[in-house]
Length: 128
Image (cartoon, rainbow, N blue to C red):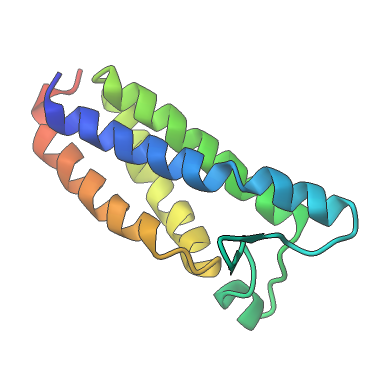
């Protein structure tokens, strides 16, 4: 498998785990009637553009984002194995992931998404 596909998979896992893991305490806090937690001084999934346009952080919103993170991890696995379905899933998740990254004001995932998209495109012929 080309190194570029392996790197694309690693970028997917980094974002999936790095942002998905913080969904769980945020969901638990909201279910308990609390506010979203702060991680390293920043609000986890709140106080961003979603709230400025009237979309408050809710459990269903966070569960949906967690599902996107899980699917990104699945895409990473499929890319690691060299499956074209992983690339297709990665591309299909970009609009929804992008919406959440914007809405929660997450600056790192879009940069990674640009890189993994280029890596997938240049590796397309090696996918099966």
